[in-house]
Length: 298
Image 1 (cartoon, rainbow, N blue to C red):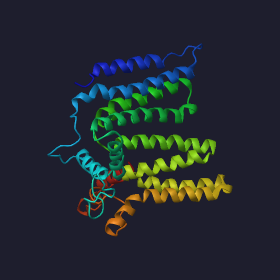
Image 2 (tube, rainbow, N blue to C red):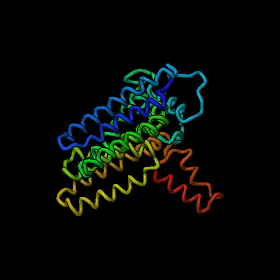
Image 3 (tube, rainbow, N blue to C red):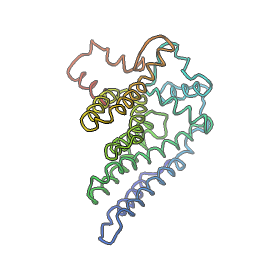
Image 4 (cartoon, one colour):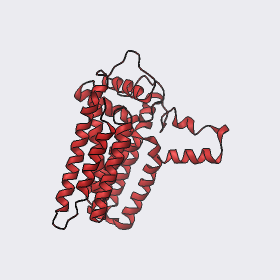
C-alpha cells in the first residue's frame, strides 16, 4: 500500500519544525542545507515505498489508450530502432509530449525496460526541481520567507505532482524539472553573465517546449526578450546572442524537422489534440476562447 496521509503529515510537520528554528545562534545556511538534503533524500526514498504496488513489467499484451500507454509504446519503438517513431507515417500525432518519448526511451536503454526505474528517476527529478526553484530565489528573500517558500514548494511537490504524476508515464514529470532548471540557469546567466549558464537555460527551455508544446509561445517570447537584453545591456556580445537564438529556434523546431523528414511537412505541433482543439469553430464563445488561451500559455 502507498504511504498513508498520516505519514505524509508527519514528514511535513517535522520539516516545518526544522524550518521554524530561527534563533540568532543558528547557522541558517547550514539549516537550509539540511532541509535541502532531507528533501532530496525524501524524494529518492518515497518511490521505493510505493513501487511494490506497480506491475513489474513495462509491457502489456493488451495496452490501454491513456497517455502513459502511448508514451510507453512510443518509447519502446524508439528503443528498438525507430528513432523517428515510424509508426507515425505522417506527422507525429499523440501524445503531446514529443520529447518525453525520448526521455523514457533513454531510461529504458540505460537501465532496462522497467517502468519502475523511470518512476524512481521522475521522483528524484521532482526533488531536484524543488531545490532548483528554491536556490533560484533564495538570495532574493528574507530568512523567514525562505523557509516558508521551501516548505510550500515541498508541500506542492508532494501532495500534487508526486501524488498525481510521478508514478505515471506523463510528460509533466520531465517538464517540471526542465522548467525549474531553466528558471535557475536563466537567473544565474543574468547575474553572472557566464555563457555556460545562458546556454543551459536555452537548452532547458528547448526541452521544456518540446516536452510541453503549450509552452511554444513562451519560447518565442523568450527569443524576443533575449535579443532585447543583449542589444540593450550586452551590445558587445551580439554574436553570442545570435548563437543562442539560433540554438533556441532550431531546438524548438525539432518536431517540425522530424515531420519534414518523414512526410515533407513542417508541422510544429502534435497532429492530434492541440491542433484539433483550436479548430472547433462551431464552439467559439468567450469562455471557450479564454480556456484555449489559458491552455496555450500553460
